[in-house]
Structures are given as structure tokens and as C-alpha cells.
Length: 299
Image: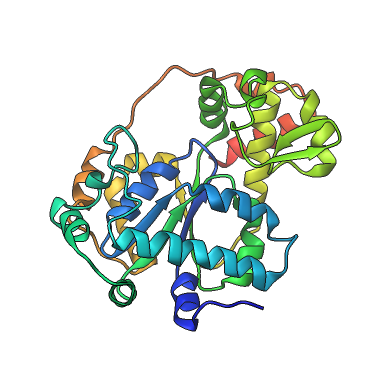
């Protein structure tokens, strides 16, 4: 059996995980958290999207070794060294939106040894953002009870409209191998990794709106099963009361504003876009439609 150093495992165990239903504000929340003091943040790490579906398949210790190797060796150390930072100002994880030029210049100009970077890492906290992985949280919480989870939610009418506009579950989008990865393949049928294997034939026959509704229900069911060390953010509350929500979030995480946090808060605004208020009625699966109607009442 292979292991990392005990202090590496401890550092990884203190990570912050940001997830939720797609189009519910995970990117905004991730950006806010990234701006907080001593946070190092990974935006939708591809390696973990393929690792999470293996959590019930491979040995616990082996899975944790791969998980911690990514978080610490591949992500945290490289981030502190000024590597793996996003300098594309057109993207949500643009580093200068959340960290100061002085901070980044210091990292890029340094010639720190691995030993020095490891010492620096003691003062920093790992955070990463991945929508759609709620189905694995129960197992992840068993492996890492000290993880802190930040979950975003949004009413189904807005989510279904937003997903339809993006076209994520259209036939054209889903036939692309890179649309949602990894793919679940059973026989000749393919589906996103979060589709239950028992429902893969049903998924194949669903129309675009039904697929969006199935996805929403899948994620909401898992949110309802989670409890401690969990901070839930309603998307509308985040837009309407941004400062209050961020202050509550900081209390939950035990963290302080960074130099860019106020700037990010002030940039959050609510826009009113045209939407189909009858979209739930267009779900053809009656049992699924009833579930989504009940979720809408919650909001």
C-alpha cells in the first residue's frame, strides 16, 4: 500500500468543496471563496471528474491516495509556485480577478524549493469547485469528515430554462464525447456519469426537457440527504443579499475577506432574462413532472 505524508493528508482533509446544481451560482460562489485570505482554488478539475465515479469501485486507500496527490502535489504546490494559474481574462477563473498583482508577481518571481513550498502550504487552504458531484458526497464525507461543503441551489424553472438555453442536453450536444465526462456506457447506451445505471434506457428515450428535469431531481435528492458541515446558498438570496450571504459564508468557513473580495461582491448583479414559465408543464414524464413541481414549491 502507498501513502503520502500524514501532514499532506491532514491538509487535504481540511479542503472546501463547492458544488451544486449547474446554473445555480457555483461559479460566483467559487470566485468569492477564491478571493478569501489564504485560499487556493481549483476550477472544475478534470482529473477529479473522472476520479469521483471510481469512489465505490476502487479500494478506499488507493482512491484517497489519488485524490490527495491531485489536491496537494498537482494543485496546491503548483499553485503556490505560480504554476497552473489562469491568465485568460475572458474566463471565470482569471487569477487577477481574485488575487492581487503583488501576490501573483511574488509567486512567479520566486524560486522556492519543494521544501519551502511545503512550508508555505501550511498557511493555505485548498478549495475546489465541481458541479454535478453531489451524488458522491455521502461517500466523500465518510472518507473526509473534516471537509466543508458549500452547496448552491436554484428554483427549477430558472435552472431548466438556463440549461435549455445552453443546449447541454440536446441530442447534438450529448453525442459529443467531451460534452459531459466521463460517460456511463452500458451496451449500446451512453449517458452522463450521474445517471443511474438502472435508468439508462429511460434516459435514452427522454426528450431534452425531461433530461434536464431528471438531472435536477438527481442532484436535489442528494442535497436532501446531506447534513452537517454543509452551507447551502440559494441563488436568488446570493444575488439579492450578496454581502450578507458572503459574511455568513465566511463565518461558516472561518475565513476572512481578501483584498479583492469587496470588489467581487460589488460586481454581483441580478439580471432579468426572458424565460418559459410553463417549462415544467412540458416535462413528458408525469412522475418526474410532479417531483419538479414539488421542488418549485420549495422556492
